Image: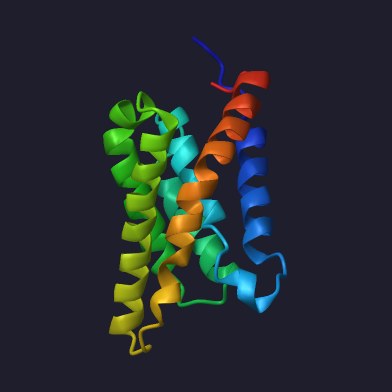
Amino acid sequence: MRTRQGGWIVFTTFIAAFVLTIVPMPDWIVLLRPEWAALVLIYWCMALPQRIGVGIGWITGLFVDVLRDGLLGQHALAFGFIAYVTLHLHRRVRVFPIWQQAASVLILIILEQMLILWVKGISGQSPQSWTYWLPSATSMLIWPPVFILLRKIRRYYRIT
């Protein structure tokens, strides 16, 4: 029986994503902030599908709800859903070249944002401008360095 290791490293990467989610920035650049927590969740769902799943996605989403002072559960629903889709497709997406993975990440983040927009619509919040969709594009653009960094961390610490 193999022992699992590196759980604290995975936890630390999520903490780093939460910090990047709330770090203060000028108003004009906040619109471009990637979905850091979602990117880390997608990576770990692809890399460790036997350990990181929908439950971790749900918990991660709840933390993002608290950090962003949003409606409790909106990000939890969206993150649980993208974790499910990532787990369902992880064998295919893992073998894609990194630019195709980035396109897959774009679709996953758009799905996340659509679910959040749907929940906001149900709760009576007015839709935002087209800039609401900018984090999808920046998440896609930042995916290659995030993927490479997290892969190096996973290999260095031999996370299984």
